[in-house]
Image 1: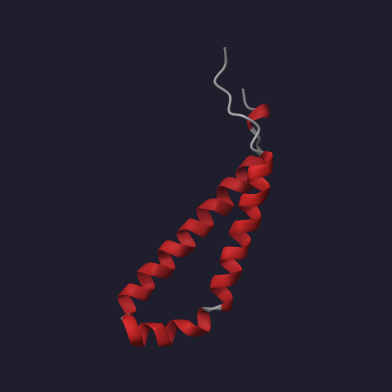
Image 2: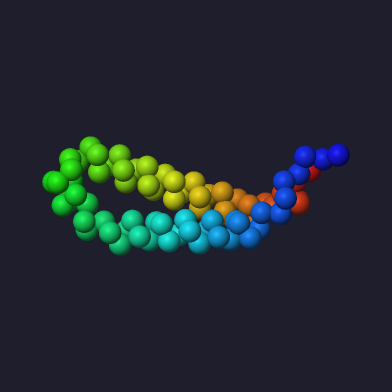
Length: 75
């Protein structure tokens, strides 16, 4: 009996799409960061942006990794 994961290709495609959308939304909304920094504090906005982009990057990384090296091809 092997410990293989189920086919994750549909989720991987959605993860890539979600990750790209999240990064694009962050880039598109970057003009608002200075105003938010004035209202809420620079440190809080920097931490929020880093956390948001970290989640987006990790979702994108997982999706691309699954699409390029699916579990069915692993030994």
